[in-house]
Length: 241
Image 1 (cartoon, rainbow, N blue to C red):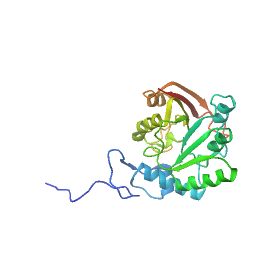
Image 2: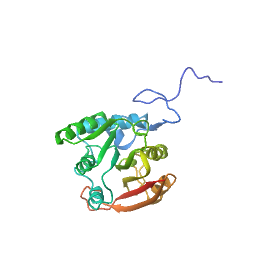
Image 3: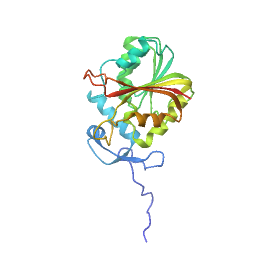
Image 4: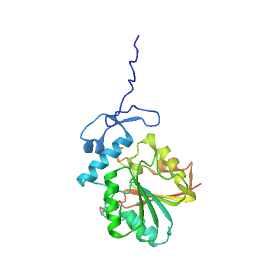
């Protein structure tokens, strides 16, 4: 017969806290493993926070396209979306947030990386724009008042492991007003199927994920935005129920 001596639950290699049901440990893989320079098991928020801090400090931000995404620009120019309150998780270097703020939207952004928010704050101040900046984990803190007309995200969902996605969609409903719209630029299907971030999504995966809390789900192919000429992403627009 064996006995547990104290707390022998597996612990995160980054924070040394144990795995829990709502914050399980995941294997460090792919891009995150490259940024951390180590492997093992860690909480997703710890991995995201540390890897992104490293990436922004090194200037190694592979998802940055150095401009607002063309699909977002088109939505604004065609008045498919009109000025209102926008929440953006994971704004990165802030090209989309800056574009929206420059076109009359009231923008709030949240990033888990203190380094990213610090860099974006300097940019916002230099441009004289009014953007609310929050350091935090969208799954665990941030707005919950249901006051936003839109949520816009680019390449954020693709960072979340399957165990976190249903919680993320629920958080979207807490942030949006009733009938508010979720707008996402989401990475399309890949072969072989990625086992680590950046993950990839099919139309069916997106529809299943959103359909419980959203209606009128529109999914169209769009360019990545990186000038490679390939329509390898989806533009997703969905209305909160």
